[in-house]
Length: 254
Length: 284
Picture: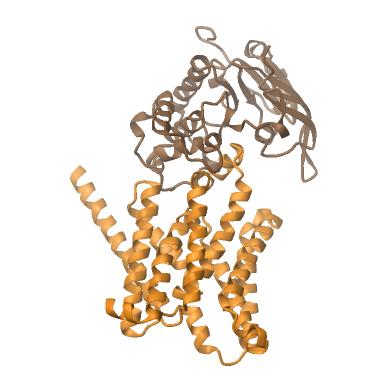
């Protein structure tokens, strides 16, 4: 059996003497589509940053693809899509093609040029997010939703085994959020890409995911979405801090 | 003019150095502008002033150092300043911009002390502040050539990493690129370009050659590579027109180069405005 793609053991993280995460243990298996839910300030983004190796936990250990994260060398296996509003340098004079090709920088390696197949790789990645027609457009000319699709293409171009997404729908209008999650679900299903996503869209996302983790400094729930759906409103409210709308399905889950 | 360049070595030096700087300053400038580090270039140029003034003072007071090219201490101060800026940015994580006024005022402070200590190099100093056509020596030109080789090698070798880092530094770190080291090397290379450009453009105007051509290019370019190409074209045009007018009208080349680049920027802005109105008119 394959090792879990992410295996977190007893992780805690303190930021300026404030506990952000406490005794977190969880696994992400190959093929999972995990949504990490939690209120603002619950440590969701911190947990993602620990998974990505951007910050070190105060205690505990993390394995990526069965290897201790300190010794993990294949960062290109993990694609990252950050919150657009936090990260992207708006107004940057680059085309969609250039931005997506940037996703191959780590895979190509230091002191090496991008692979000869870069044009085809970029086009294929853009096709998988339905953005191939925008190849030569300037990145800053696109809408928030289109930009976020381009950033997913940038993460996909290196053919990762797993995507980590931090609130990817921030800045996307409500109408396009559904289509955006459909696209992610298709990537998970058809390309077998494991997805770990922090989100607030509890009601929108539940139909598409396989697993849910509920975080508020510590893990309150981690399991299949079907188990999550059986939780009562009171149970959720007890760790969420306020009531969370219960999800009613029309036509059953995928 | 061409005859004069073939005849006089000082003109060969000035034009040689100018043409090289016209490429490397806007080339590096593109990354500086898109990474929003334009003010750091200003801070470093003022630190270079301290190094230059210190060297001029030492060459007056210490006999062994009388033949020392002030550019060397200028380069050392600029590189040291870039390292200090990085240290301060880490120290004041939430107020990173504080590093700029601290280093900038330190540069001017030390510069002022050395200038007051040493008397009688006002002509030299004027050249260092605003550039000079006549003061570029063969040694200065060779230093500029060496700096250009380092800068071009750095950009060619790390182009893809620099692009990713400039566009989205969090993504660069998350994807496992050695963002910290590349940024550190970038700062050192920036310090080198500032020190190298100073002989032609002058300390007070050096950052403008790194930013104004880029500002013009960004208004009309459609891609990152096109921004680089246009920035170099605008930079080169400013240097050539600026040096020729400085030579004929006996003006400081820093001033003529920067004013030319501002004129080019204005032309680009007017062109862009007209192009947008025409496009809107066509759509309507």
